[in-house]
Figure 1 (cartoon, helix red, strand yellow):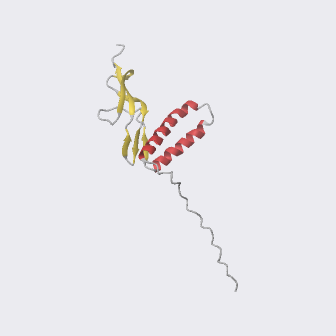
Figure 2 (tube, rainbow, N blue to C red):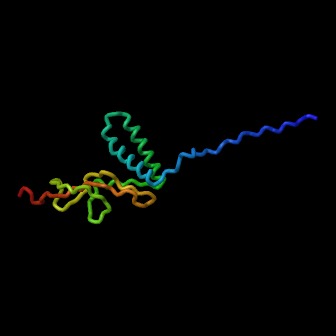
Figure 3 (cartoon, rainbow, N blue to C red):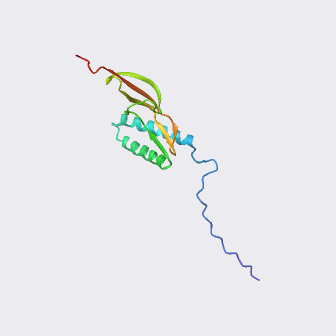
Length: 139
């Protein structure tokens, strides 16, 4: 009697599975990644003389777009008018003779607002310039 061989089983491809040590990004990790992307984006103009700055700019843009697809938004308030009641952490109010008296502008962002799934995860830390220029100056 001849022993019949069992048909060879085809190897089943393993499903793509992350190693056990890998975990999904948590909100804290996404916030940190968003903050670092913002920092790099702010520094890129300083490297404009280097042709490779465009590659870096593209890469950072893709990372920010990926974060946005995951529900992370980065909001830099620099240049906006400062109003009482805004959710900002003001590091300093800086007098400016470039602005009219009473005018208040966010002149520098030290860290941006970061929203994760429409919830504020990081409050922007800013410097606000306060106008001290008298409109009647020189009369």
